[in-house]
View 1: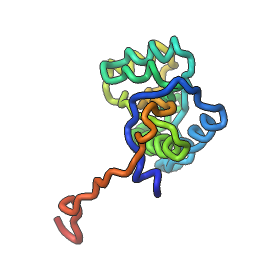
View 2: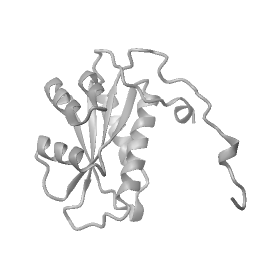
View 3: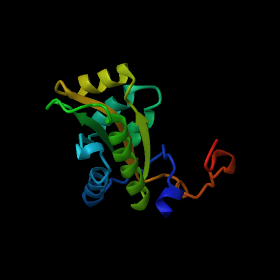
View 4: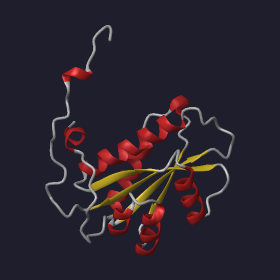
Length: 168
């Protein structure tokens, strides 16, 4: 539970590379997400090349921090076999959150950048990585060791006025 309460969006990273073992744990966490009808539509594109991270950071004005990250994971929904996209946002959001929580658990900093449903961001990623038809970019997660070691700390967000029992 500590990772849930201490996870924060980290946008400033040191130059320290993320170890292969930690990358594997991040990907495994993403794949452990719940999935509607257990379809598991996700695929993960791991980017570590500085040049490619810089290119990816141009996806939007909100993606600049990707250039300084050690890596980025692009979450893709694979619908080439005609799978339903009905629960695509839920499945991909769950996988994204699992990766963010695992990053916190591994003392990494991470931030989730929305791609879907913004068509120009989706097109940018599709073109940059020459994605096949039926593969839909959903999110980008920038990851690295935080410059500020205090990045992931508890901030109480609980609000009693947002809780309703039995009726609104």
